[in-house]
Image 1 (spheres, one colour):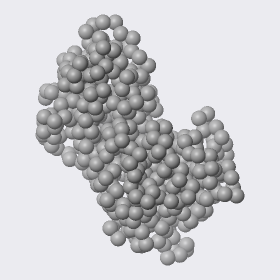
Image 2 (tube, helix red, strand yellow):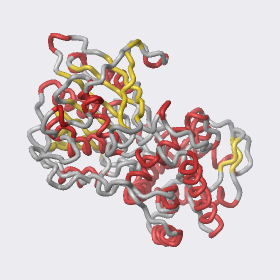
Image 3 (cartoon, one colour):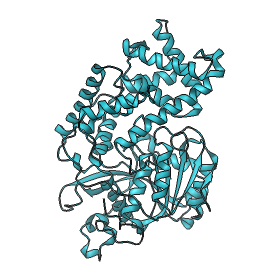
Image 4 (cartoon, one colour):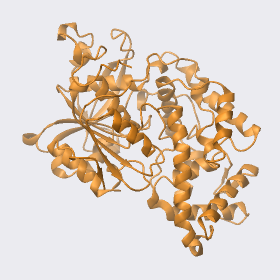
Length: 500
């Protein structure tokens, strides 16, 4: 089972910054190199050496220096880790293909190797594949001391659960802000897009291709908005809708997960003899809802962990994010039901992995959560009233009884001490792009892909029926991968939007 982070979730120059227009804040639009305040960053030498981390074998690494605050490029700087796998066929090399795996908050150094494995050899050989740990991620990220694997949690059915969720979200915000008040305001998607362009220039390239998935695809769309003339080929796999980024994306995930639960119930009902979850879809859903209520009343003891009603729905959301894992999902539910009944249970590998991720995360998980909190809260303001979240939770219960209290509940951004320094980038341009999206995506709901597609009229959308988040790197759709290979190798987008 691929346990994608349960947060996948969820995270301006003027509208004149479209293809062919001059973008006021863009280094690309400077009148001359001498007038470019970022010249020292654009012309910096990069010292490459073999990467030291075992998973990066075969890649070379370097450090990129960027301004902490692009409004003050002579001020403090950040050092960002960069990896590269050189083109295997220099004679046919097209250029660079920068990558981002998503999050926000995921490290990006191993993304080139993962992408090379999925692309056709000839396509991969045409590019230097480049990865980067974005600002706020990896060695240079804020270590706020957070000890949980996710900020998401259900508020449950009572006032005590809501108050606990509010306290924990506020504690996460306070832990980060009190330690890094000077760093945090600058860990934004807009600044990361600027970093992508600094890397392009430091590599000596006039243009860059870009492959992003999930939040990384939204980053690619933002980059295209800020630097339209610098885009070569752009692949957006499972993008978020930038206009919904923030609390809107979280709320959209509630409905998407309820639909996924219905789809799973329809799958499980004919298999009741094997899993004993219910002989009808309604019975399966009732089994799941009852299990959540039982966990809220008394935590379920399994594999040395105590899973309560706050985190059980989060675990379910991760389990049902890929319809290829339905049998594992059913087995895990059966194990949790047996444990709730007091029977001795040995959790299967997938369930054990998720329990560990949520209830006993290591330092790396806490650091990743710190980065996610910082980036999302710096990017976009969210409601700050506890009453707003309480009302949103109650309003969601009728149609989203399991996941509404998760995706409408309090978030750390509600208690963030600072306001975003810049408004979110309004994405609306004609840069050509290849969009890929699955109809049942629970982390980046499909309606967001459709909305982004209308904002990018130069794009083509490849739709894949099914429930999965991100398509290219997990082998879910050979059809989608073929579209990526064709586009990156020839530059030809599909003649029209396509359904695989």
